[in-house]
Length: 290
Image (cartoon, rainbow, N blue to C red; front, side, top):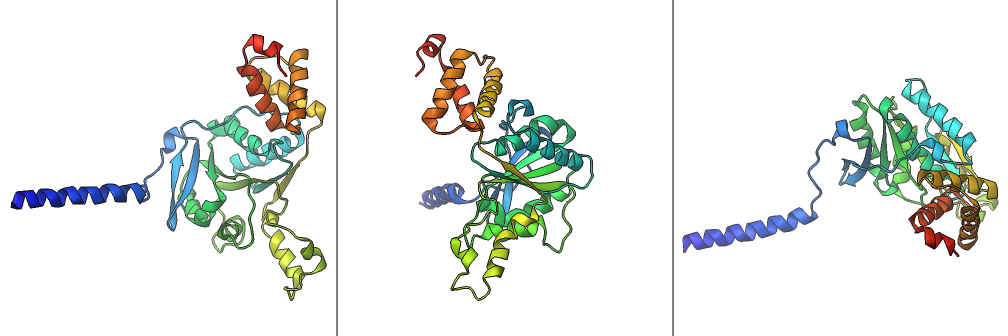
């Protein structure tokens, strides 16, 4: 009877442990620094876990079209950073699908051999960003903390954590970390007509406006992206088709323009989506493309 009772207790204990294992965060361990060039930081309680990404989405800078001016400025800033010279945090803003995120991802392809590493951080995980910066400060690599499609609503915690990490903490900024962020909003925070005419609920409305622009103001370099015209769009299509070893012939050109018209958008993202669709079709299917 005693043995049966012990077996029952062990079985119950194992059941509890399995259920706990399903809901508890994973054990905090060091990522595979030697074999990873891209990582994802995820909040876990008051800290976080850094996970290596085995297959990062990256490609040559030459695949990107119509962003030459922005690319030159971002490359110059990144090379200053990799060379140990002063460099700025960067905010890339503007029209959707115009290559903001792709430009940052492509940097990894170009500079990984020089020690550049990319860490993706979602805005919901930014509250623990100071913990990540402490972890990275002791490493020899150069890290870009990548915040994609960044914007905040009033009262979100990550907003203040990012402000402090960029410029505003008592501790000195780490020499081997920069923040590159993309957003469709120039100032990352919602702006209202009341901000311009004075909000009845604000005793000092100008100070409320200053608070909203203070985050974007902490990025030393601003890069603006604009909607593509037809030539820009076709150049982007040609670059992505070349990645699939296909030409931009008259048939592909006509199909690409129809694709953009159906989507109601001419952008680098639309060009990539068309190229994926076109490359995935059988030759006979391209003959009857609508």
